[in-house]
Image (tube, rainbow over all chains, first blue to last red; front, top):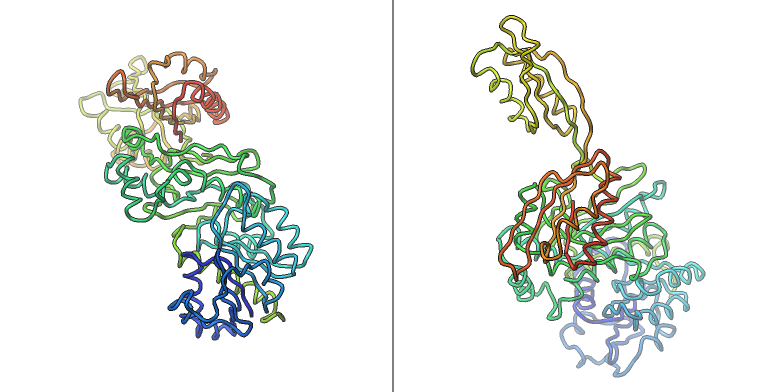
Length: 334
Length: 169
């Protein structure tokens, strides 16, 4: 199976490393993976016969396969490729450059796997219907909750069922901050500073702290699991920057924890600080994510896992690739 | 959050107690032990027969299991349970507001959001100074969850208008 990787940041590197390190395990699954292109914003590593991943990780742009200014848009059609893996940075305004790469890949009849929320938040329905029209798979497990296999479970095991509502904690940074405020009585500012020092929060934490990241994931869940056509503007969003230690204390007196909960049903989509009973499965701590889906027949199902991290995200991507390989009956011609 | 934790039931149990000191405590202890929340105690002196004094205790339990555990524990002490009467099912929602809750007229906030059948069971405030924001908890109770949801919808609008930050159960 030939792959093209677009994006060589933390996730792209982690995936490359796993493909290199776990090559034997993948062969044990009768999956012979060959990467023919890895693209960054300023060029790409290209080899029609398959890149030597270990060497690329070691040498970077010094590697002989490096082609400056090479764009995936020119190479997707040319290189041997079954699946395009799109891992460029998230842009929730217009989804670019991810939308163009995914669109091009689907138009060329390639299956696509992405970890990038941007294209899904902006153009999910369009891209899914293009995939359908072209007979391609378009999977995005890594976009919500990293390695939590929520879309796979719904797709493979809940076809007969109907999802009524979804709630959960979809952002590890805000959960870390609220957990620290609750467990160790630190202020919001101190907890945020700590999250930044630990690398959980960005220098500009707005995207996480104000609930935009969680809202994006909620949109993907709505469209992906409940067949809706929602956009970011459909989500009522309240961040956690105004949570006070007193709020946490008063909540605890009633047996509640303050958690940043994303909620979705047929009538509303909401990301807001909520009071969650201490014995609820939603009260996971640290940077953990949790997703509960309430269904008509299966009742309530809850999934907990690390919601971020390059290896976890890369693992979800690889799981999607393996699913595609299985559905294609092994190897599709390039 | 549509989950059973928000709901509860209120019951009135009538005990026949020997009219002597310590008997009531003996009946109340299992209620507290198994998590019942006592609301009211009435001595029914007009119904006294000989040395037996009927006492009615009204309390809240989460569900029937909890109620039966309490009943069994009371009977195990030798006290006779004469009757159990369900009073009503009620629903509870806790809302915590952060902001200039008092400067923006908390009475007006509450008056605007409460509808018939919804009551403020408890209000707790943490105030630092007149300049600082305060944090106020309101425990709302109602005979239906729909009424609480409708109260919350109005409260959200008022909160936006008054720049109050809220979290709710």
